[in-house]
Image 1 (cartoon, rainbow, N blue to C red):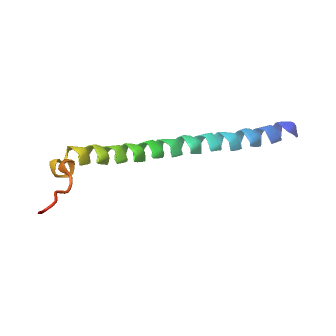
Image 2: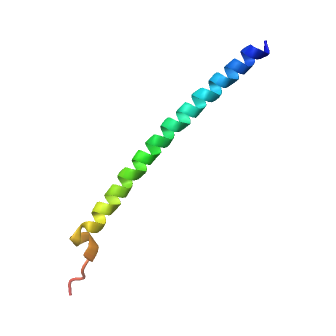
Image 3: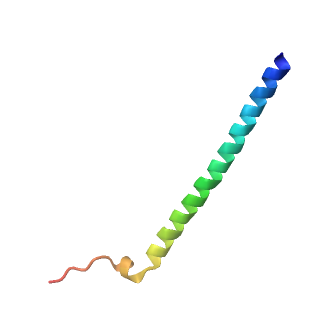
Length: 55
């Protein structure tokens, strides 16, 4: 009886770990994409100057 319960607990914990690992990879990819957008925006000379006032 205890072996069956521990098996199910282990299976659920294993699935939870796999889901957390997959979600972590997704978050890192999303964060990397945002960092690339920020990096490209800084290299843009028009965006680096900022808005200019017209007299």
